[in-house]
Amino acid sequence: MHELSLCQDLLAQVTAIAQAHQAVQVVRIVVWVGPLSGVEPLLLKTAFALLCVGSLAEQAELVLETRSVQVFCHDCALLSEATANNLLCRSCGSGNTELKAGAELILARVELTCVA
Image 1 (tube, rainbow, N blue to C red):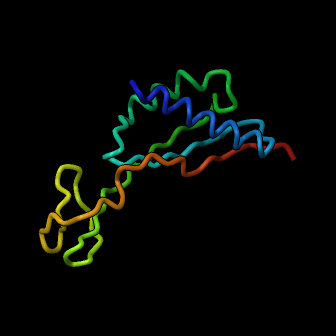
Image 2 (image 1 turned 60 degrees about the vertical axis):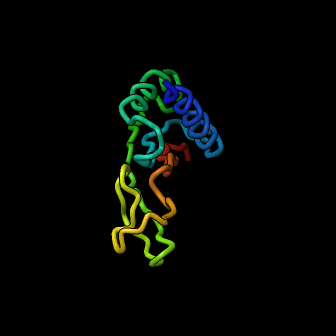
């Protein structure tokens, strides 16, 4: 379950951000997950529930937002949505495409409670 190590890294980043802002609590964490990222969202949420205990993020809401798969077609120069198992251009049907989005795992936002 590589989601456990990914979650450890995620919590390390969140903790560093919280400490840099002198936060007393992490309220919400938003992560973008692409369908081609190799991450199973349910396993990531389970790992988070286990690892956040005793941390500044213990009460935080983990929000996983699924991103769409997008490809750029080198034949017709169109950026279009695709599915994880079909990376063909939606416009011309070409397979001469380049993946532009859908494989990411990005810490998009961290909401904190800070002491003034």
